Image (cartoon, rainbow, N blue to C red):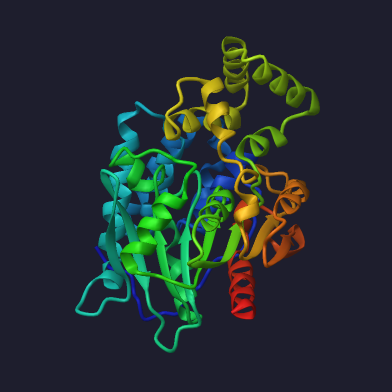
Length: 392
C-alpha cells in the first residue's frame, strides 16, 4: 500500500453537488467527497441507486472494494467508513467496517504519525472507564493560539485530519479529540453520549494542562462546546459550528407545523406508546427519520422514540447560558437540511452574559449552504481563524 505524501500543502475541497433526491443522502454523499476523501466520479455512478439504508451500505462497500482493487486507498477509506454510517445497532458489519476504515486510515496516513518528531502526536486521555483519543499538532513557527476541536452527533475524528493540518499550517496549535458517543469511543469502547460535555473537556484540558483555549464544536458540537465553556474559564473563546440552542428543538424544527404541535402535545401528555408508534410509522416512509431515530436510539441508549426525545431535551443551552461569558462565534448555513438557522434568534436571546457574540450565516452563493458548510470548509475555517486572531 502506498502511503500519503506529506510534502504537499493542505488543500480543502470545495463544491456542492446534486446527487440524490433525498436531502440527507444527497448531503452525506457530498460529505463523502468533500470531507472523507471520496471522488465525485465514483459517487456519481452510484448516487441514483440509493433509496434506503440498505442501498447505501451495499453501494458504498462496493465502491470501497473497487477502490482497494485499484490501489486507491484514500478513496476506499472514505467509502468503507461512510458505509457504516447508515448501518444500525445490531448489524455486525457496523463495527467491521468502522475498524476496517480506521486501520486503513492509520496505515495510509502513517507518515503524519511516525518518526522521532511526528507532525501529529496521538494521545489517549483517561476518562471514566475508557480513554479519549486526541490528535495534537504544533505549528512550525510561533503559535497564534491553542484550539481544542471536536465533532458532533455522528463524528469520528479521523474525518477532520485535513481540517486540523490546515489550522496548523495557518499557525495554530490544535488538539482534536473524540468524546463519548463519537467514533471509536462509542463503537469500540461502548461509551455513549453525555449532555454534560464539560466532563470530557475537563479531562482533556487537565491532561495537557491547557489554558487560554478556543473551543470549536462542530454540528451537535454547537451545543456541546458552549456547554463545556460554561463550566471552565480556561476556555476563553467559543466557536459553535452550527446553530444549536436545544437538540429537541432542532429535531422538530424541520417538521411541518402540525407535526410540531402534535409532538409537543404527546410529550406533554407523556404518551410514550403513541409517540413511539407514530415515529415508527413515519420512519418506514422517510429514510431521514428512519436513520435519525435508529442512530439516535443507539448513540443515546434510548429504548424507543419517546425516551430518545426526552434525552434530547437535556441537550439544551438555556440552563447554563448565563454562565457562558466568553467571546462567542456561531456559524450557520442558510439551507441546512438538519437545522433551521432561524433558531439563532432564540440562541442569541439566551446568551446574555457573553463578552461578545458574532453570528455568521454562510449561503448557497458561497457554496457553503449545507450542514456544517461541507461545500466550502476552507471559507468557514479561514473566517473562524481570523475571528480567533481578532479576539486574541
